[in-house]
Amino acid sequence: MSTFANKINFRNNQDEGIIEKVEGEIDFALKMRKAVDVQLIDTNLYMSKELWLPWGSRGAFGGQIVAQSLRAAWDTVDEEFFVHSLHAYFILACSVEIPVVYSVQRVRDGKSYATRIVKATQRGKAIFVCSCSFVKPDDSVTLSHQTEMPQTVGPETLPSDIEVLQNTLAITESLPEIVRKRAQKRLEDDLPIDSRAVITLSPQQVISGSIEPNTHSQRWFKTRGLLNDDMKLHACIIAYASDSGFITTAAAANGYLISSRSIGMIASLDHTIWFHTPARADTWLLYDIHSPRTNNGRGMAFGKIYSQDGTLVATTAQEGIVRLSEREQEKRKENIATNATGTESKL
Image 1 (tube, rainbow, N blue to C red):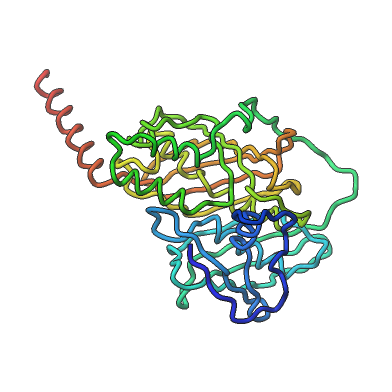
Image 2 (image 1 turned 60 degrees about the horizontal axis):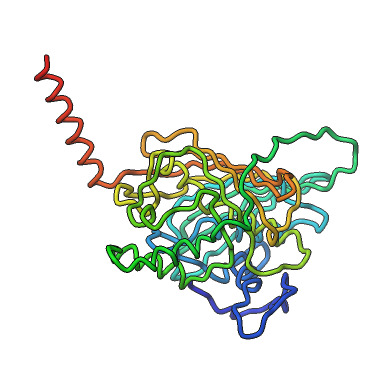
């Protein structure tokens, strides 16, 4: 985690968004707010306060850049507007050594809708761009329908991702050093999101990086700290969490975890979120994900986020790079050549 000192502090927001603190323990509510917050440095110009580099990643966590961009854009619209859609492209890997600067372009301020374009830059180069659209509440009589939330196991009976890693570390025999380091680093990060996969990985699957191919994945998530009623903050946190375990579903559809030696690279290319209704991020949300396709080194994933009462609160979509490692590519080429030789000999 890289944290950048605020040399200019325009507002007293140290406790903004937090209603619960426990002395002597990690303040996860504060940690979550700071992860998505930005610093105003000039008109339409903002700066990241901190960036997180996940273990093995080429750059900062993409969901954090999405959330911070949304936070910056939202700061420039009138109070009565609420986000309804976000469309983003990841251009370059984000370094955690320097802050990200977010430049907001005020494209439109209409009676019902407001549009913003955000460009995130480092060292003068664009690393990320997104468009955000905001809408005023509609008090007219409207049409309404939604897909039903799938029947699934509740979060209370599931182990957290942290507990899965702890169980893996408990196996002292035959645990590869790289797996141990990855698990320890993840535990040290002490992330402010509690995430629980509906299908729990065994320690053996975590170690091997191989699973049964499955085009669907489901996980429950919520913040580990209790937040106040600022629904803008909750929406930014949902945006943050929506990039976690998303494009990796495309790898899982082929039987691989992100930790597999057969996977050479996984990275988000774009990200879209449609916010259907305000929802709290400090209560359980179900992320139901489906990957319909991988080909040409890319994968697709679509997601639906439901509140625990079954309300569809957001829909997501993403395309990302999903490449095999050079080792796995060579292995598959050899298998193809061997099979071709075997076929010719039979003829």
